[in-house]
Image (tube, rainbow, N blue to C red):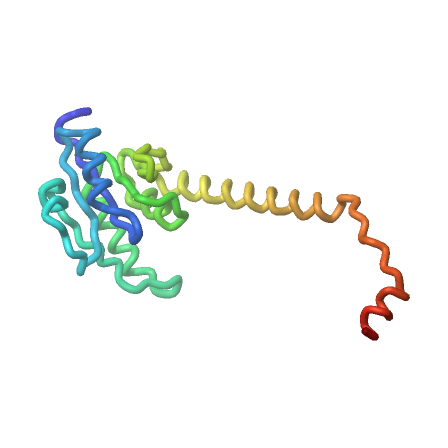
Length: 168
């Protein structure tokens, strides 16, 4: 808990930014909290009191063919040089964003107020996401193989019973 640490909390729909800021203010009372919010986000009074800085996340519309708005956004986050970047969900997009922003440390704040460390570099984030993808594929393949190879017997169908049921 060093004085002057810059901690950013990246807003996500569905989770309360206020509770995340309160949690970080309790954990790191001397830290300088920064909330990264969408441009039209209505800030409450308690959010204004907890966070000293606000950055409006104007990611813009980006695609694989036109990635420039995203690259400008990542450069802006890198210039801020956060000591800790908190995301509110453990999603692939947010983990990749946290890695691309290059903070000193990155973490995901779980609903039970536990910080889950995520990679703070883009290659580390991509390696984690690839490992998760491979694990999911292997589990799915194992379940499919187990079902395919299991010895299940279908009940014997008596043709006379089938004819009787349809005729009635």
